[in-house]
Amino acid sequence: MTRFWGRLASLAAAAVATLAMTSAFAAEQIKVVERPVGETTVDLTAKGDSVGDMLVFANGIFDAANKTQIGTDQGYCVRTIVGKSWECFWTLTLKAGQITVEGPFLDEGDSLLVVTGGTGKYAGAKGSLKLHPRDPTPTGYDFTYDLL
View 1: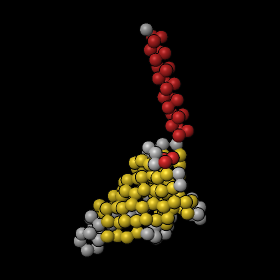
View 2 (view 1 turned 90 degrees about the horizontal axis):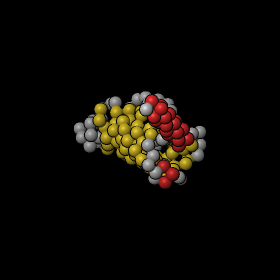
View 3 (view 1 turned 45 degrees about the vertical axis):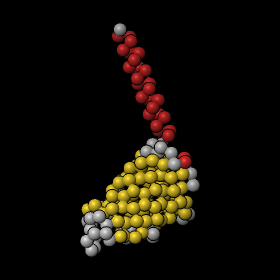
View 4 (view 1 turned 135 degrees about the vertical axis):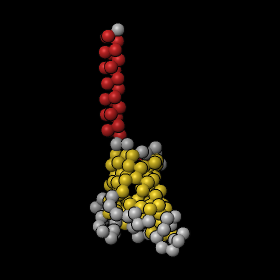
């Protein structure tokens, strides 16, 4: 009986190792730059920045060097905490397919959103998006998609 449990443990360890290796090879990182020039804030509630306002956008997406446009993104955010954060949903469109994300966009600093799916090459995508402002203005954002 002890040999049975030993073999079962060995098989389980091999399965976990195989799954880990498969996941490591399936992972993809995409680094792009968004230039936020096509944004509009819609004042839906009290005058000025207030909970419930919307930010809608459609922007160009550029390669990691910020030189060549390789796609677009579009979506919307709802103001949830005045002066601090928005809750957002958007779609990144690249030649190979689309990637959707959802989560909080912070007024200052880095934001971390969840990848909720995709199409084409990215069908069934999961993972995260780290959004980093390139400068204080900001005139652009570094997007790092870590796909599983």
